[in-house]
Image (tube, rainbow, N blue to C red; front, side, top):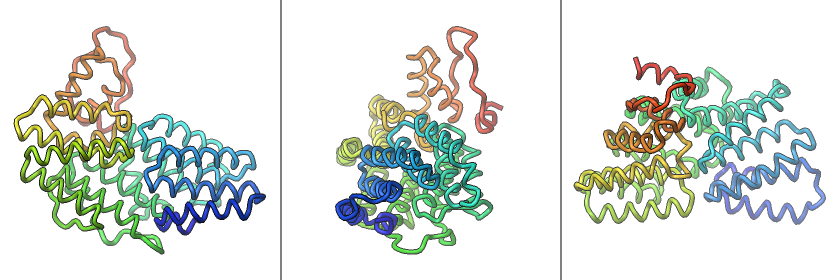
Length: 361
């Protein structure tokens, strides 16, 4: 089951898990929970995020009961990532931090397991707005200065966090170069599914930088690339209709990466075709969508490509909240959007990150 799941063969992994449950109905709890975690990973590959989270949490409860720390970490990492991808970043961070406090002290002899937990916690730190710190941590593992898990999904999370951090810092070309590097470590075995995810992330960076050259991939990636290239070169009603369809499908299927790209390009096309009001609505939808609203790092990574619309939409949302929404205020600081102080004095200020201090200097 594990080999199929980590090889990207999700349907096969689910079938193998079902067969194993039938054959080994009385297996020890830790073995049963291990199969469930791999089943959760397979579900996540099919964009069945909620099901994957539920399975991973079920496995976590078993691992906690039998005090198997390695299993606790693998289950918590899977559940935490699913929570974050579905827009509940704070819940994800709380789960991962609790698991770290509970299990990490006993993982001194398991550096790869500890590294998986570090990768997932760094992902949630990035999405909460700790962009420069997350970039440094991810690059330390990418460049071999810290232990890195050899699981393909963990390797990709570090690369994606680093690339999106670079985009948030206005360094989209460096992000593209990072994802295109051929010298980065690749795990043994079947890498095709993970190559597709890497290609999709390269398309995401290209949607921000405007440079779609040198990207290849399976038919699904090439179809997306064709649509986004069309939208950039010929912003028209035809491109807009296709992007609206992409937004609907991404929301229905809970495909957060496609939703980010679709709303980004939809806003751009609307701006180019003279519909500034609708473009601003698309950006507002991007900032407030339940699947995206807590993902400050990823939102900040798109902001440079959407200014001044992004700043206008964010200021409008802040005005509606009386400039008191802490999430929006932090996003404004991360993206350099100037806002007025809250109407009433005395509210405690959240500490600034190094990135926010740099913008405010």
